[in-house]
Image (tube, rainbow, N blue to C red; front, side, top):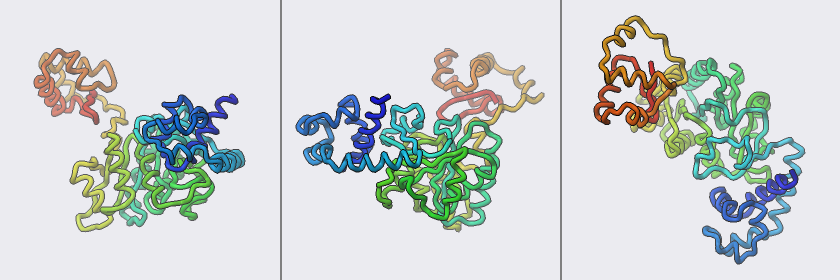
Length: 369
């Protein structure tokens, strides 16, 4: 137990070293074997590690680093903050798939950071009534799904509407902050933030002694995108944090969806652009999202579908049999197990999909309809 506490202490210390971000910190830990071992290495040995240099190596030996750790530890203990490292079981597993995952996270609340289904709902700080209604209807429609968590950034506008609507519909929601847990920004959201702690959580990579800076918020956005199975942009103009989050989600190969808006409405110019450039899937409701993510139970076969099954070719029946064995099956597995050529498989999959017997899913997966 003491060894784990010591390692946490030194991981905190590493996060306070000037010039060392999460990527380099993770590389250092892998190189040295532990955070504690890094601080035991001589400056000359530290300088040999790729990405280091004399200035960074000497910063590790700076006494002020440990003064900051002691200050932060007092805050953590007094406010009952959970400190999560990448080695911790509660660390968001989806973030571990991202190359720039934070080295350390600070969490407060009871929310499950590894829920089965995670949706980010984001948008402009200056929403319209149209955006408010879209956001509320979306989250109300998601309330039928079990083990779901909704993430957002606790900012004004769409973020706040998302969190409040989650509370109203008894959906756990996580607010990812661009600052430490010693404050809430904007201050108007303090009550909302407190109410979120019961089922949800507040999460940040910034310590309480960190200065609030504009550059923190793009960093915050990568956590929102990295923790989410799908990021939904409700309403946004052509610039802003919501679009940055959507771009990051795309870079992580995560799904992105957006609501369309009127052609001349500036507040929908960003979402329309994402859809136009195929950077986001167009949705108009929660049902669209649930269908796109295959989070709805397949409907029972109609008499028409039953008749279609009787008229299938041998190849189509083979594919249907393979798909019936699992909830979802990847195209590569179908190719290998069916023995069909790639063009033959593709044409038969298309025919089955046109008959509404199967459904194609993101990532080249298929399932029975």
